[in-house]
Amino acid sequence: GKNFTREYLFKLIYGNNAEYNDSTFRNLMSDLLKLSQQFLKQEGIEKRGVESGFFLTQELFSRGAVSLFLSQMANNENELSKRNIIDGDYFISRFKIETGRFYVNLMTQKTIKKSLVITESEKLVNGIVCIICYFVIESIKHNDVLLNYSRTYNIRKNIDIVSNFLELFNFEKINSFIRGYTHLNVPVVELYYKLLKTFLNIESSEDYFEMKRSLHLYSKRLGLNDNNFLHSRLIDYCIYKKNQGIANNFDIDRELFELHDILLKNEYYKNEFKRHLTVDLYRNVLINCIALRELRYMEDFISKYTKKLMPKEIANIENYSNSLLNFEKGLYHKALNYLNKVKFDQFVFKLDMKNLQLKINFELEYYESALSVIDTYKHFLKNNQLISESRKIMHNSFLSYTQMIIQSKTGSKKINLSYLSDKIKNSKNVFDKVWLLEKIRDLKMPAKRTKVA
View 1 (cartoon, rainbow, N blue to C red):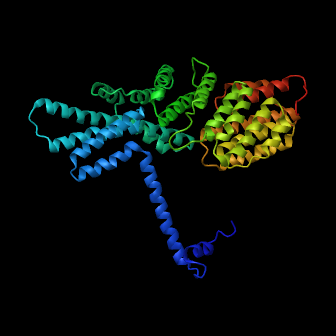
View 2 (view 1 turned 180 degrees about the horizontal axis):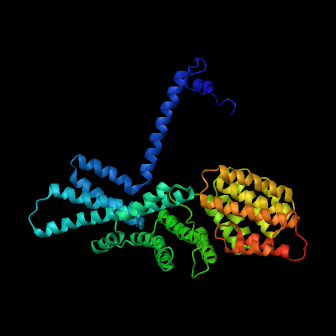
View 3 (view 1 turned 60 degrees about the vertical axis):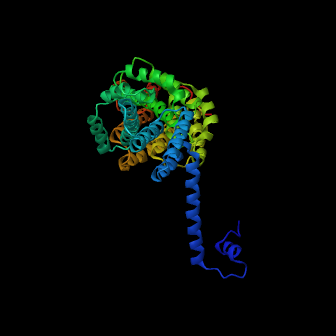
């Protein structure tokens, strides 16, 4: 409101006759911020029942209140079992419970029987196993994220760090140790180990399908974070194999379609820190629908899931998505109208936008505009340091071949279309190869009426 000013608030606090003092007001705002942060901290502690219980046990232990400590630790264990989710948080909590009990008993109980030593030792062994489980899950997860993040932004140093990390540990022996020294059923550790094997043996699909079967079997016992991460990695595996041109004994596009559908219907795209659909996942669903010509599913997806993106992204991505959908339907003027409404600055979408802009101009026979797009597109690729070299090669090849097709179509240059077609077919580093080959086939055929509604 127009009255919501520093001076107005100052008078509410000190009265209408008080003279405004900016220094005092800033001190008040600083105090308010600290109190707000303290409030949020307290809210966070109270929301996390198991974790907050450990703050209490630590204080009880430091004050020597052993019986209360053991009682609260039992409450912590009860809260943990109610979660019915075995993930990284579960193992760090079990580690605290097992080791906490061991050390309290070590300090307070007299050792008079060997059986007591054996029983107490089991607590410490369970604690050791739990901290190893936590390490396996979190180390594989974060190295996996680092690897994908670094590949996207072409940071070679980080890729080497991940490789060096994996050489430090024999995860197969670690996994055998976990199975041999605990009574706990820990499918999540098996899943993360299978994830590691899947990406280490990426040429083979056997490990991938074994992991997929296990994940679907245990998904109900996993938390939101692990379901999000592991299901997303199944998708990443298929996308990586497809982009690298690695041979498969299954239909990888149809497999992706099934994985996306599972992820969306079960809302596995959410985790503890994010509640919105990510832009990258949204984009991948669109691309997959186009590859399979699932345009009805694509239309329903845009209608239902665009609103699940971050609010600030919705308008632009909705316009881009409808542009892409109408382009695939052959409604090129409508596609161009939607595309002209898009205004966002994410580099991956800049590539998508320029690709789509170029293809729409081509289909509408706006060849001068298409050549202009190619020119600015090439400069964009050259000057953008965040785009990997492999991606630059793919998109520059696409631009060069599109330019040759335009030159052939306009008669400005004689092009051997059969040779060009073979060259594109045999190349592994060309973006949108299907569209390019389709345009060459059209050139070889008698002129046909273009649908530009």
